Length: 104
Image (cartoon, rainbow, N blue to C red; front, side, top):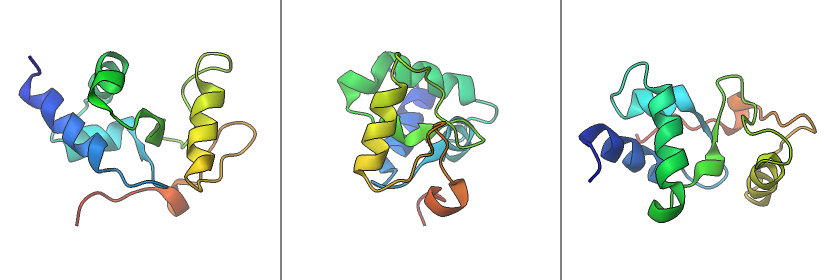
């Protein structure tokens, strides 16, 4: 059974629109879990597939893909590009352009 924090994190993750991204810390803040970036990582790692979470829309706070090449980097880059997000060869996204500010 998911904790209340996990459920709030999942709700934020599911709300990120196609073509938009958030950092792990921003997801945590919107979910009301201050300093919860690592919890967001754990939720994504353990629940993304079974809960249908858009894991690929979550990046490091500098806009870069956290996964290393050969371990998800290329898939995440391709999924983001498929949604119209420009990703540099190094795996960086311009947060000012593609960052989501959360629900209005």
